[in-house]
Length: 479
Image 1 (cartoon, rainbow, N blue to C red):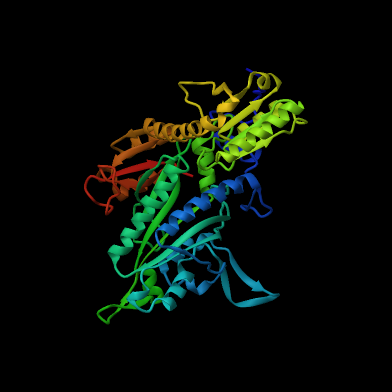
Image 2 (tube, rainbow, N blue to C red):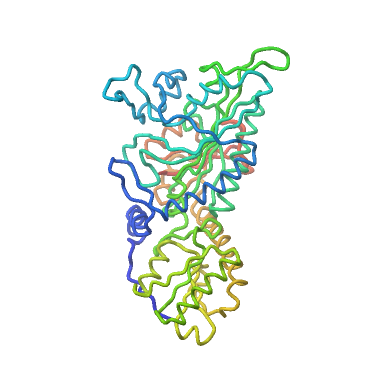
């Protein structure tokens, strides 16, 4: 087997996980810090990951009957003040514009932190009758929430997302739609495409979205044992409908307030991808997501080798594999191999003069089973197109299995706040009966930097209410 340079290029996770994360974001060319504190420049490779996420999730959203639209970035400040809990929740994060065109504005405008208020301003115009319901709208946009402690992808003052907003005739319809997005759009996407393990549950009253009556969440464990919120779906009840008088004429001829939902997922998912699947050699991209599923590398600049790697690239492309040919033989092979490993491309196919003579290529898997280390083997070039789909699918499933195994092994059952704090300090999660915790215990956890990530029913289902007997609280330190 040909040697590849193994000089560490990243800070080991076990030495300094935050530094490892920053190293990887930089050296895998995912993003860079922007000129304004808390802003970021998403580089082409990082944006390629986001584009793939967008495409898949957008299709799933449209399958629900939801249509895409766009609402303004600038929102009159008075809109936010109409729903008291909402404005109170977002006030510390607002960016406010007071001047435009060289003049002071008559009314300050807020740079969009979320769009419930401006959406309702227009929903109240568009909804007149029960025939206009349900109204299902989604937008892909940017938002601004001024962050005090920014970190690329995880918490930035500006980030990209999708936000869905819907209006329904009844509470039950809104509740069921929010649950459908939670389970069948977000949950299915995270599991099937991102190979992410998560705990689906309900936020406590303290943790729910400002202005919502219920928030459903998907919580994932990162490589250091901390939790990250991967996506949320909110039941807004009639809070915004009352504030904006969003009403409809019912079949019975009465004026009724609509019931609403909102839901969102963000570029934070790229940070989650790094922290859930990454290792000391770099990123590991799930094959179903990967913009490049396989890279074909020429080891040396022999004309015959270059011709063969290009032919292999065309063959794999024709077989439906997203492939890139790396024939930059003026760059040392070891450096190129390490760069592709950093970027987490699922498969490398390496071809040199000796391989060509034997009719073989070296197949290097980026995603390997810890019980079957190595991940490199010679394979017949003629079999690559047939072999690769199975290799890619195996890697996809292995990432999910490994993430789930980590969460399960690092989640402790406890019965007190003290035990929960101890478990999270050791780099894991704790599971505690809500009846043993309650709001008082939740406040006690907060004093130690620990939060209730979600409530889950005893059978693993998402509970209907905070106080349902048998609910279990998953608690953790979080990003």
